Amino acid sequence: IFALIVFACLVGEGYTNLPSSSQLFCIFNHNEDVCRYGIGIGILAFLACIFFFMVDIYFPQISNTTDRKYLVLADLGFSGLWTFLWFVGFCFLTNQWTWTRAEDVHVGADSARAAITFSFFSIFSW
Image 1 (cartoon, helix red, strand yellow):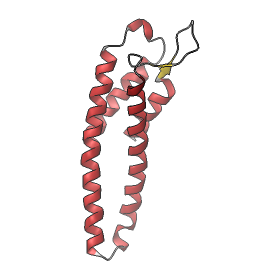
Image 2 (image 1 turned 30 degrees about the vertical axis):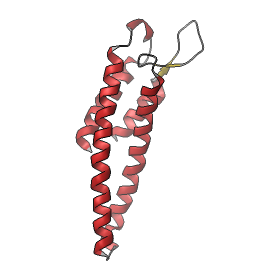
Image 3 (image 1 turned 30 degrees about the horizontal axis):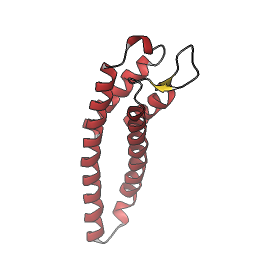
């Protein structure tokens, strides 16, 4: 759910424009990479959660212990990797938010703070 919130905040109000221009830019210090990174890990984390949820549903029906071992190790490895990626995302979002000028943020400051907050919570949930 945290990944979905981060993704939704960045897609919904992560891009904005100045009143005098129609050109969209990322609310995080005009750095497009920050928004792309947050959206990317949010989508991939959500899809991975769905995949591992399906694996958990069918896990009792898998009789081969070797397959079970590999699935558990894949889940553990992916969770460790994604914990690290959420930490990097939190640091990246926070760093760019501190460098964002207040006059560039007309709408979306709450969504930006929510994306930062839920990326921090995602570190512990993974």
